[in-house]
Length: 239
Image (cartoon, rainbow, N blue to C red; front, side, top):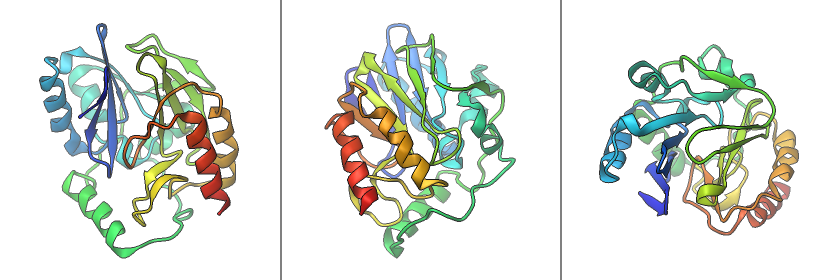
């Protein structure tokens, strides 16, 4: 689905992945669930591209619903995902997230999230392989020239991805615009956050980022700008 020129989403509002499309190729932001591979192929086909146009995969963090086709991309295309070194054990499925930070839960939205995940391979997520690791902030020489900003809290290795070429800031699960466990809409802290206090502090690093589009791992795209998103997330966290 096209969001703006050079900016596309695959998947759905429930679990998002994104494509940054340039003349030099395609950078994929997050790998969703294993079943998203067919969505990736279909979106590329609609753009007149193929899998061979993909130059890079960036993982905002190592949770299972963000690493879905990372192993397949490495196996079939030789593309090793970029990930912060603090989340490597998570992406390799060597550790699991503690059962904390869930927040409120409503039966209907939670059941839809779980069922959607199961239907798209969420019970058979392969560990990510061939990872390229980094520490701190980085700028990558891949399509879009993305800047990676370390924002720990949701997980130790969570990063935001700023791509000025498409006027976008990808936030993974630093925030959400549709809470998968309650259905609540609008910019707010994401559930399943390991350290909410650290996440709130990390968020302040993004207040000065110049980007119109702010794109979550879950929920619809937000075009109100990074500064306003940070303000609203902070308000929601305080409540």
